[in-house]
Amino acid sequence: MTKRDYYEILGVGKSASDDEIKKAFRKLAVQHHPDKEGGDEEKFKEINEAYEVLKDKQKRQRYD
Image (cartoon, rainbow, N blue to C red; front, side, top):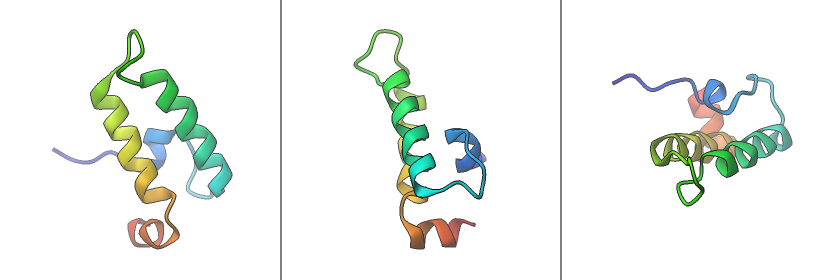
């Protein structure tokens, strides 16, 4: 299985600032949280994985 683009998952561009990435993550995390009615655990995990890489400057640099 091919991994999707982390920027695409969070709905931000490659030039997004740290704040934009954080906002996008929080919005999507609340929307897809597994404890919420209609939440999607797989989508939540995917969003979390993307954020873990993009929030860290070194991991993000390696990813890019």
